[in-house]
Image (cartoon, rainbow, N blue to C red; front, side, top):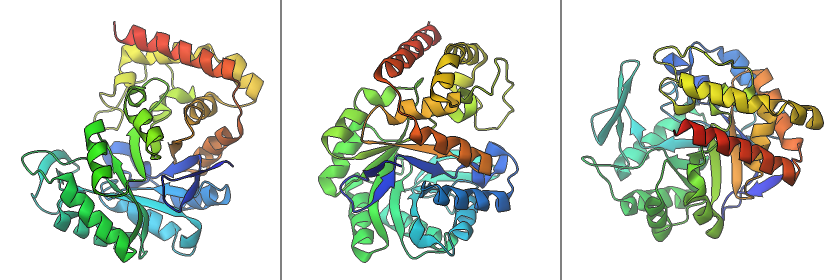
Length: 331
């Protein structure tokens, strides 16, 4: 599987990585079988998809705990990333959301992210994190300047507790500040063939500054697998609720788009999900595609995308079809 350097760090990762948000369960994702998720992580490592991404807020610590159990006897085989800055321990910072009885605040203060790190190290049963992301950026009224956050992250790196620094959910101005105060190796942002916001500013900036862009939701949380039929009813509280492409009128646009690619799945002997994931990876050598998984079949499905070599004409055809769907959704 193709490897790509993570920014200017000494870490090399495959073009695909495994996301562990769903492993946290809760009302976002429903009940989860932790033993199956552990086996899925092990299978991902066997396939060479060894970048495992999680966060404290995924299941309010549960995802990290499951990932920690999975990596207990094979930590050196994984590139492990987690995040800081979303906390429910106190009211420091700015209110972000409430879920499952927890009130979550954005807190990127040096004290707050240091606490987050120590809690994550304990839950993950490790003494270092390979990639440490700021999960959401600081806002008023509990604002912390990026300079202060970055100074603390650089200290953690010097101490050997983290190996690379990342940021998620950022603006271009955020990025410019981060690299002013230290070495930023990766950002994590939403990107799919139907959501191309990052192409305007963030992706070109990353390409120019040797920053990896780890993209999440490449299959729009399952919509672009081809397994969802138009008219799917989103349950209240689940992760897809109120998401643009899961609105009834947009579901049909997505399903109609996918229906045009049956010949491509036959040509490349793959699924629609595989096509969409490989399309994402093909957009830039700076991209790493984060694919969520919590079951063995999820891992086995995702990994097939890495071996597809899409022809340029097919990439352009898919892009044109997606552009048409996007345009219709905006009318």
